[in-house]
Image: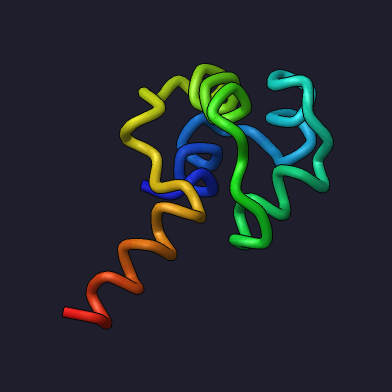
Length: 73
C-alpha cells in the first residue's frame, strides 16, 4: 500500500500526519508524489503515525526500483 492509502485509511490529513510524525506537510506531499524518498527513520515514524508496519508501505524509491526491474526483465 502507498503512504497516501495508509494515511487515508487512518483518517488523517496530510497536515495531521505531518504533525504526528514531526515532519513538514510538504515532505508528506513529496513522498506521496514520489518526488523524494524518505530516510529509514522517517519511514519508521510515518508508518507508526498511520498505524501500519513500515514494510507494508511501498515507498517511492522501492516503487521506482521495482518498476525499473520489471521493465528490464
